[in-house]
Structures are given as C-alpha cells and as structure tokens.
Image (cartoon, rainbow, N blue to C red):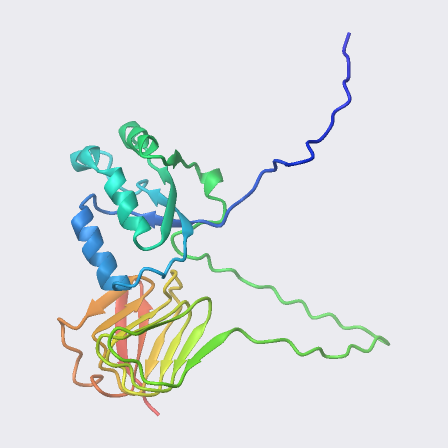
Length: 257
C-alpha cells in the first residue's frame, strides 16, 4: 500500500535549479608564468576588471597527450586568477588526472549543461523583426533609451584606467602613454590615443576602434592584441584609423573622409 505523507516546505530556505551566466577561460598552455605575463599585457596591473565574476577553467580544447598538464599547479592557477578578481569555481576537461587535481584544489567538474549560457565568444543572435499592421488601433510612440555609452572628456595620465562595462566608450581627450581605455563595445577616440586601448573586452569580435590620431602602445579587440614592439605602419601612425578583426587578425586601416 502506498501512503502519501503531507509535506511542509522549510520556512527558512528553498532550493531550485539555476543556470548561471559564467565566463570560460580556454587555456592553451600550462605555463603559468607565460599566462601571468599575457594577462598583465592584456589587463595591466589593475585587478578590478572582472569584479569577482565566476569562471570555468576549460581544458577541453587542450591536447590529451600533453604531459605538462599532469604537473599543473591548480593552487597557483587559482591564486593567479583571483588576483584579477576572477572567481574560478569549476573545471572542464576530458582527462581524469586533471579533474582529480582540480577537485583537490576546490574546483568542481563542469559539464556542458553546467555551463549554461557561458561561452568563450558571445553567440551572434539574429533578431527577427515582425511588422504588424493594425487597423483602428492608434499606437503612441514611447521613448526608449539607447545602448549605454560612456564619455571621457578629461585627459588620462599614465596609470589611469577607464573601463566602459557593457557599452561603448567615447574619448574626447588625450590618452597618454601608460593609461588604459577599455570597453566591452566600440571605442571612439577624438584625441591622441597613445596608451593601451582594448575594445570588445569580453569577447565581442564585432567591436572596433576608431581614432583620429592612432599612436597606441597596445591595441586589442576580443583578446587579439598587438603591442608597440611592432611599429604601426606609416599610413596609420598618428593619423585617423580604424581597427577591426578579420578572423584572428587585427586589421588597421586608414579612415578616409
């Protein structure tokens, strides 16, 4: 005989399933010194870029037969990520030794279903716009705020940093060597741009950089970067130019009237 017992929900808590939007870092090397150097080159010495966001460390694209991964120091990797206010919470890998080492360091295994909406590059969503013709009914237009844009109208000195989170950035004053301007969207610079400039900071490969006077010491779009060690071509150095991605290559082109 089946007996049905009356249930009582706890008064102090409730447990539900959740899909978390997570960042994913696809590691292509187990060399933590090299990783630290490249993170410094991309994000500088500032440690507030990620603002405590959770992240999955993803080894799924790494060759299975790489012996160096066996000796990977997960504790040192976690310490490095946390120094940039990244909160590593999970690991994705095919190799059991990696999963065991990650679990020993406090990370949990992540399956595709666990990742939810996290992707290494944001998906391109095609929006379908439907036009509805209605008779008799008169629709009153309602003002809608446009996408956010940050405007900087004061010069940035060496060591200063501006981050336009989730929006475009317009720079109206000089960005000196050693300063950083970062945006999740496009960057428009209407004054000499001599510091570090990073557009599409969270993976937006469609982001672009527009500058009236391009002299940047570092240029980056969606993680693909170029440093000042390679001089800019004469046709764009100190002149109006735009920067965009073509696959995994940065294209720097003159801006023509």
